[in-house]
Every structure is written in C-alpha cells, then in structure tokens.
Length: 175
Image 1 (cartoon, helix red, strand yellow):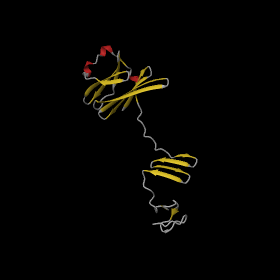
Image 2: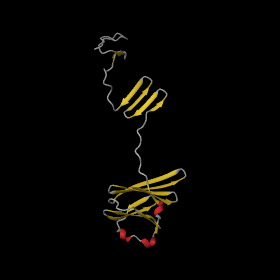
Image 3: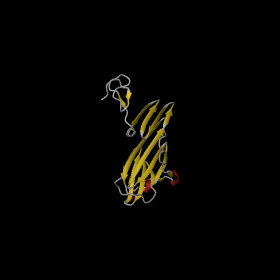
Image 4: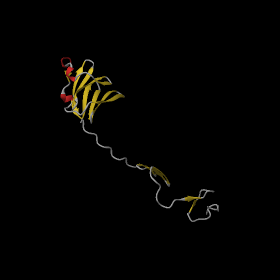
C-alpha cells in the first residue's frame, strides 16, 4: 500500500512498502522546477499504517513492522533511518500531522502497449522494432520472413531469381 503526505510549502512525501523494504520519495516543487529524492530502507513488512510527526528539524516517520518499530527522519531532501529505538521518539516535542493529510494512493495501472505511429506513408512499431516508409522496410529483433531469400547481382545489385544463371540487367554470370 502506498501513501502520500502533503507537508505544505510545495513539499510531499510518498511512502511505499515493497515486501520488506520501505521506499521514501520526497518531492519539492516551485514554479518551473521540481526536485525529487528516493531512498529505500530494509524495515520489514508494515503491520500498521505509517505515522508522521513534524519536528523543528523536519519530519519523523514511525513505521510499525513485523521486525518492530522503525524511525525514518526526513529533513529537506535528506532521508535517514534512525538507529535509535522508536520508543524514544520525543513525543512531547512533536506535533502530530493530522491523519486526514495522509491519503492512500491509488495503485498505478500498467501502461498500454505502444500503438504504431503513422505519418503519411511512414509507419513505426515498437515491438518488434520495425519501420516502413514507402517500399523500404527495416526490422530489428525478429528473424527475416521465412519465404525464399532474395538474391542480388554481385556486379550491379539488381534483383535476380534463385534459378537465374545470368543477371537480366547487366549479363554478369551468377555463381
């Protein structure tokens, strides 16, 4: 389950528990600018929703996990897991951020496959990677068609049939 907490002053904190790891992403934005920083901590699996506290130096995140309580300190774009015991959290000095400001984020939906791009007589596909323009075609990552391989004259480059002994364009003897 992922969470978002608006800290005010165009600052947000995104929290996510991915298995036994907690990922903390801090985002600060202003007109035409955005800074983002992510950190991952081995905390254990969450057993309760996270709690955040505002302190004079930033924000403290308290997480209850299957391995015990964990404390993560956030100051600006810096994030660190405290080695102190969570029971020593100075509750008298912190103001509890209202639970209403911490919302559950909707899970991300998988992206739809990229559709072919078309511009005039040009078409591009991403999977498999191929491009067509007029009568030219280029492919990567897939074997060529299983039809008869095309042959060309080694002298002039004209297309020749597999059973031709001489090039119909320049008369060169084919091997």
